[in-house]
Length: 401
Image (cartoon, rainbow, N blue to C red; front, side, top):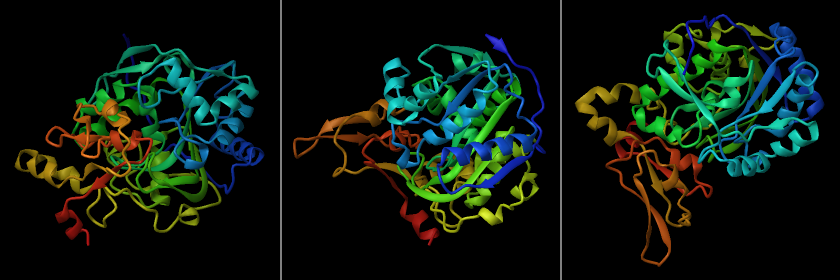
């Protein structure tokens, strides 16, 4: 077991920002080169072993805006191939961490074709190692996939998305994919409280940033709004952000789409990893965040009511022994008309609260045992048929107007 000791994560680390309205590879390459130069980190890859960590949460086509777009990967690879000694593309999607799943997901997300054309290695090593994170507040140990640990530099190709549990998914949340396979479900089970889970994500991201240089490229060209990170809808935002500190990148991005109360960033700010507000982020751009701001970005059903978003649920777990929190919290609900009984939700449930049972019409349907449900929304995230909806408590609907 290896250990990592204190290293500074500078909240003043700048963020590069550009408009970008298409996935034209030449345009992307030009913008990324310019951002690397502006950030002063263009030489960070020279002669290094570089692990590219895409967002590959599940097998989705690029049009769904749920995963790293192949054009972003290709543009980044053009730059890296000039400098890096060794490049590997490595990710642990949702589900069992096997070579078969990796091959299917690389192909389904459109990344395998790019890697093959660019002659870059795709990772099929499904081993992992335990590492110590003594500076962690909530988790002081992680099991992480081997290619990420073996790399000298991490390139984090993340996607700007809404997220039913955390409200927002971007640079920080993308590092959750360095935990192998179903161990991600185990992390949900270990940290069922929303605040603890968010704090764990900060511990995980801080471990990576403290252990080696990272370049975090956030695709906000076409984002995902609504019930992300996989069941939402594409929304053109038209921007590209990057930085060496994932916390500052996310702090800027959330202001563009008006998502606040994100526990990872609030916790990161308390620890001094990023500014308390987006206005304090140093931008390397002729643009302001307001210049690329989009109106009416749709929030997940779990948080979108004005004034009753994620932030409300931060204070509830301690009231009445947590009973009020659980009663008021939105819950996943199976749409019987859409569910085909494939069992993916049952396999992804950290607490094994879902069973596929015969229904009255003779077909199989998923059934949730709500007494044990921890409201992590893994079932919604990984349902290939979008059959898991979010049911909001009527009182919350009334308060939210």
